[in-house]
Image 1: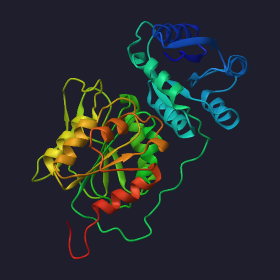
Image 2 (image 1 turned 180 degrees about the vertical axis):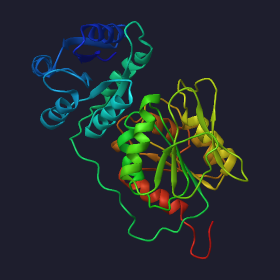
Image 3 (image 1 turned 60 degrees about the horizontal axis):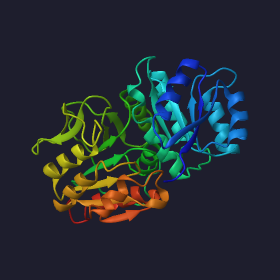
Image 4 (image 1 turned 30 degrees about the vertical axis):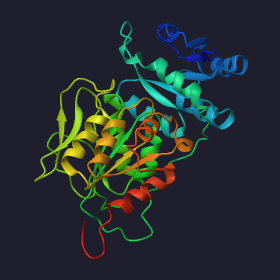
Length: 346
């Protein structure tokens, strides 16, 4: 058994520090080695304790979490999991942190309610295993393909989890304004998905929106599954649209990538392209295999460029992935696979 992941907990609230510490220490593979109440204490603790992972509050005295994260990523890159208040403002700050280089994020619960932290230990262990070391970098502007894109009759389905914010930005910024209809399930708390869709819409050429029940799948639009209590599916072959369905979690997730991929396989068959990006666990692997068996083209992110090579690894191992590619090549490949032939649309 490998040594437990060593964690520093940074939060200005003693109650929250205690809650996070209790949740993490309940896992034998995690060891909280220290706590800090602000950025100054955290800086000293990092130097003294050299933790594997830091959990970092966004709102703190002396220096807020985003400013401190930028310093960490510039001076001493290491895996950082952001802990954010579950508000729209907190969601925007957390998404900014993910772009700066945070490993992942969790919503901050109310005292006495640790449910939002149920997967925190798993995120910490994945972060410790990842050797995650990224430098701060602003997202690049939207990129229009060098050659004219001739839109075909394909549907694109993308699934992602840990590390998916940065991965989706990289892929979707390669999409032109007339991209194929694209549906996405990214594991993310409900308070974050609307802000993430809005951010993608600002920096990408197509229209990006949080999916709504009954929304028609249209060329030039990208639909992001809302977090919360429903799964995103596609339905209605004569007029394809989004459906938000109430079902139990699948693979521990709601929305689930498998649920989305299953529905795309049924609706579109060979007229679909499936993409599975970075994330821990196996959600999406079985659904991607169903898509491939139905004739869809499938792409998986390769190990080297994944923050966590979990979902793509399982998909590759079970034969669901037709080709594995580095993250920077996936957007262009999707466009190739969905482009209409010169003599007519597919």
